[in-house]
Length: 112
Image (cartoon, rainbow, N blue to C red; front, side, top):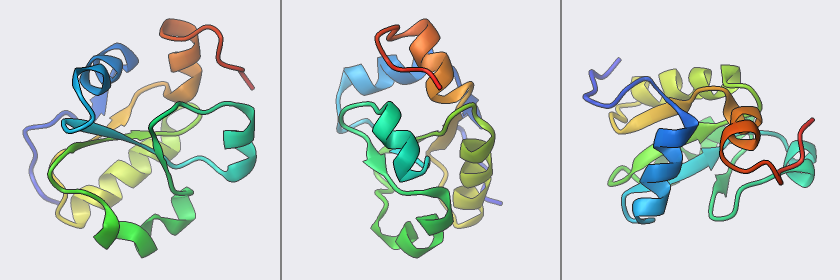
């Protein structure tokens, strides 16, 4: 696994601040399934279901901090480990997932 100066997990508040700072700095990679995205999604994210991430590794940017998002944080953590194993260093899992985002950042998001 590649060592990284970036945290393995990041809070939703920190993730929101990074994304707000500019799309050239961070990108949210949403690894939830299409049926989950239909319930709630964040604008400006890149959506790739977890099972499809290996096929898309070469298309992911390495020049931005990838912030991996799922429902509660378990899948995103697995994908973060996988991407670090693939040589990505600027990648972090969003702790608590979209559920935490809905609670702490955007209460208008549907919860499921």
